[in-house]
Length: 461
Ligand SMILES: [Zn+2]
Image (cartoon, rainbow, N blue to C red; front, side, top):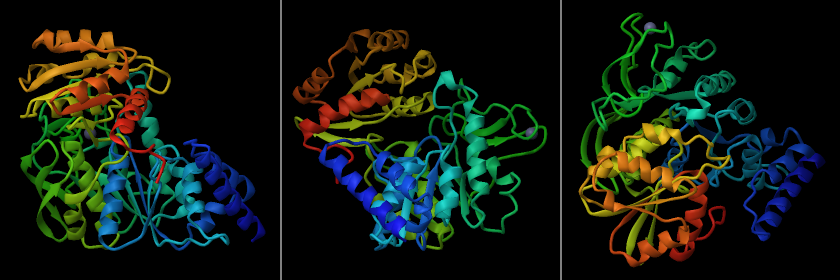
């Protein structure tokens, strides 16, 4: 008991101190707590109903959507908002929200968890529901790692025998986890699938797929339709393995706007018309993941569907600011699949806009930037509503060169090396702007934009 009290006190003190020092570091308080009491996370999460979200893309937005749905249902929710999604960060979040004696103060938690950390976190917090959004390779220079990531998720799921597991039916790498030993044998209803049941999005066969071959027999997959990247209605012509039927699925796209998508969705409770207050198909997937998790806990999916109308996005994934009267949307681009989705979204915009593409090649970004040649910038450059595109970041010149090869009007391309100047141009212009940075450039541009637009640092609040 003394050990627990000491761990909780140290964690809280450490967190407060870091905030006073304006340090966003989120690992240290959890590390301190675990050092003092290695069993602290089990204690401070005991008795809670916990949702875990993992997968390559969409973890943060799905978590925000689920948290919002639970709040709309009147619940007080604990969440690891600042993206502290490793064991130390998760530990800090639970510990800081516990009483000094280590009792949980809230009933429900939504935890975004790193794929690699899942197997460490899950046995300690015993989640009710685990959702896997999708699996993509993160960067070209880490090709092959996607199977390693899948193995890690599989280990995590095996350690959660009591959890309901929600999987993306359209992602063969994710959906096939349902057939793995130690996962497949759970009772009926303990595995749920979500997906887009109709051709939607790009509908094109991707030039670069992260999942070309059947995971069961190695034959090349065929598709009834693609939605984006390797997602879609896949099937194996050899062994018959195919996309599973969905428990929650989109059956129609009614409207695609710059700030929303309206769809029809079938849930366990009939078919609903659902407006997702975030644009682009990948956010429809995030919405599906959130509704499925909500419903897998025994709650009414209709409540989650309704809450999607008023959802706001998390840090950087699709954040909206106002600068000089112009709407600025910031969309993090962290891998080729994400880049194709975001650029594809811009190629379909029907209002005049400016775009900012930012590319750094620092360690956190990956040094190899050759993947930009695999991104489909052609439709974007040829969209007449794209009035101007600013290329920025350490590799701005490479981006500009890539865009020149995409066709369209070269005069629209401009290189700006100083991020502050980008903010000036948006502020003094008269167009809505879409900013697509990769990871370290997101940190740069967001700091500048959020200061001018009057937002605080992302770990505040
Ligand atoms: Zn096969």
